[in-house]
Amino acid sequence: MSESKSGILIVFEGTDGTGKSTQLDLLATKLKDNGHTVISTFEPTNGQYGRQIRQLFTNRAKISREDELDLFLADRKEHIETLVSPALHHGKIVLCDRYYLSTIAYQGAAGLDPKYILARNDFAPIPDLVLLFHAPIDTGVQRITEGRGDTLNDFEKKDYLLKVADQFDQMQFPFITRVDATQDITSIHQIVWSLVQPLLVNY
Image (cartoon, rainbow, N blue to C red; front, side, top):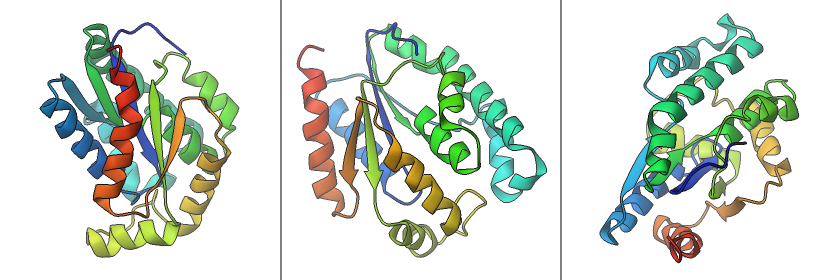
């Protein structure tokens, strides 16, 4: 993985409905209030490849898992080249909702070898911190369907998410910190802030 950066890269990961996007927004506000320059972003992006990925949300069966992986990789390369790497180079704090650990978990759950997926992501800057949110899959599904009023897409079916959660559970990267996402929003935010503060000491 690439390590050439002077900013800070913090990634929010977890199965759908764990509240990571909410926590990213809260952290961005807190950092900005403390005078930091923050870039909030997400994957899949809204770029040319990200739009193709979103089309799979309602018809995932139309391409092979390998072609699906290639789309995620193309989207990530474009994302890093156009936004993430320049921001890090200029010393900014980048908060990213999903990154290559999601690809390992979701495409790994679909049958691809996680080690192979990791190797294909060797161009991606290593995060300084990954906040991996975990909550029971039933809780996440309930938040999606009842909390948001959304219909589950092809990446959010319960049986599949259980496999995704298992992939996340097996990850042992040193930059991962697991966060109990069953707590209330304010408590989780306080935990997130306490985990991020050490990164700011020499920043």
